Image (cartoon, rainbow, N blue to C red):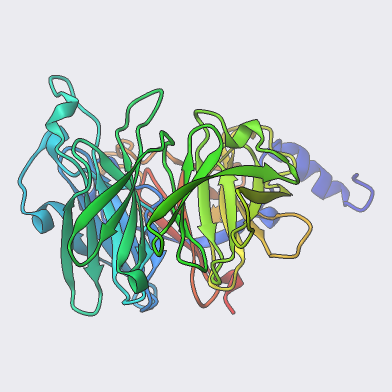
Length: 419
């Protein structure tokens, strides 16, 4: 193993222990997102690139409001462009407030950004019936105007919004936030009439919705099946799943599996990462019959013993990107950037993630005390700062990759992959 290493490098390896060497880091430029738009430096997988090349990022201010941020990569500037409570005309507080933009943002053919609002967490003395329900909202970068489409389902937040403007609809997944079973209704919104149609309770937490090349929408269902809706026939059908010709594995059918889905630009293939499984799967959306056939593409981190991946996307060029935490890493969870190029034998670990500009923010108050909600970035033995709670990843048209992390609320830019 050490045959081609110098004695000094071997000593450095031993001194570093389990930490990555500086030469192994893949470093990105970090940008601190506005603290005033969150009260716990928190956001979720709510990040997408708009048609204008700017990023649109959702954040959470528990008990207060949800906001949409526009990040301009050229100006390196963040601007708040949607105030959810103002858009819906409400001054509700506490658990009654729209506290999160948790949806994976999506972009319509018009360039409008589609998001959904969601409940936060009840504090002492608050009851869950205080929350009236979440809204589908859009922001139009061309006009700077926001619009809402009313409450989708009473008492439910919204976890997924996927528009198909050509068909005049958007697909919704709601969330009751109940445990152990989250009641999640698959719905379609008529963008003109603003009316919702409910296809029923899928009971699958944190569902993503994808659309195939025939405009059919797919939603996961508890137990390892998928419900598909065809807007042309206005009918739903339930599909079984297979992986490598075998029945759906437990990791994609259990009550607590969280599946990240995204589709290729031609809408013919869907990629899937289950949050804790350390595997990448691919599904053929063009297949006929009542089975959605899948294929295992290999492990994300070959040496990972306990992984967490809640950040996955397919870029405009069809390449898959994943921000994966190795939670079994000695010394603390270590974030990796992983990619998969269609046709490759397996995903590729690009390396552990480090911050190229450690002075991008301060982690202590003027009197030297740790800032609250800044605990999810740590310093490694070689001095590198590394974040370890990724929530979203986004691949831009120019090849740049972005990772969205929390505590503190941070956007990281990796230009190494720029075309």
